[in-house]
Image (tube, rainbow, N blue to C red; front, side, top):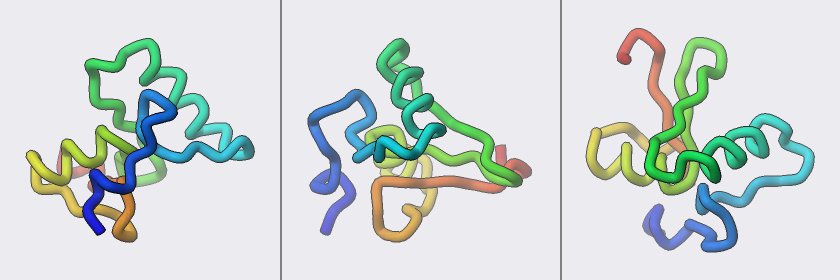
Length: 79
């Protein structure tokens, strides 16, 4: 299944955001304010992104999808 087909049209990220996930809700709020920007979040020693931003980075910047889902990341040393 392609990453694009896993996107949800019901929010700006295109990613299912569980109510219990405070960080992803915060990322969604940033994306709603800045839909033209790719949102990267530092999580430990990695930068991660979700939804449409992840699809863009996988398809155009060579990042690997995480778990076959529209989620991608890279070590901070690669930025």
